[in-house]
Amino acid sequence: MRGPRVLVVDDEPGIRRALRGFLSEQGYNVATAASGEEAVQAVELHRPDVILLDLAMPGMGGLEACRRIRARWPTPIIVLSVIGAEQDKVTALDAGADDYLTKPFGMQELLARIRVALRHGAGLASGNEPVYRSGDLAIDVGRRQVTLGDREIHLTPTEYEVLKYLAANAGRVVTHRALLRAVWGPEYNTETQLVRYTVLQLRRKLGDDPLNPRYIFTDPGVGYRFRAES
Image (cartoon, rainbow, N blue to C red; front, top):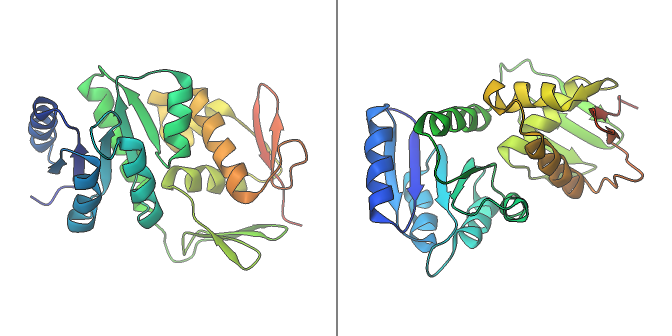
């Protein structure tokens, strides 16, 4: 099968079977893993385009698997979990996840999330893309590379898309809703927490103090503004 490659990681055989069957019917090429250890090996073997990752698994849990995968590969990771508390979502995003979907969920919503993740992971560039700069920060869109001085900054696909969109609109306030539409899609219209978490992670990686920002400024209750080139 030539469709996008999806890795489903869950210790419940019934969930693996159900997701594999449904996603295969939608044209995806699906591999499965039953543990965090198997997930890391499967990423090495199958090089999936997107990973669906459960958190509560025996042995190496989903969070540790997420950290290990993210340390080596930029593959988009969607966490699927019965735990829906806000702090658990923050912890998963801190570990390198790109998205978080609480069980039970609708299959059409899952498909929408996968499509967003695939767009982020594709990183399509025409070869004539700009380089956005602000101080010592550079976003090279053609190379899909972010550097701070002489150091490369490793971002998740979603973090990169948010930074690129903010930089493309440098000097202007970008609302939460505009970011959601541009980066995640219209089905995420009300999930402003995703924007907040992602910007928080960006600031950490860029060393950008929100109280004294150099790159990303907050317009409280409205959105964010990227500092224009200087």
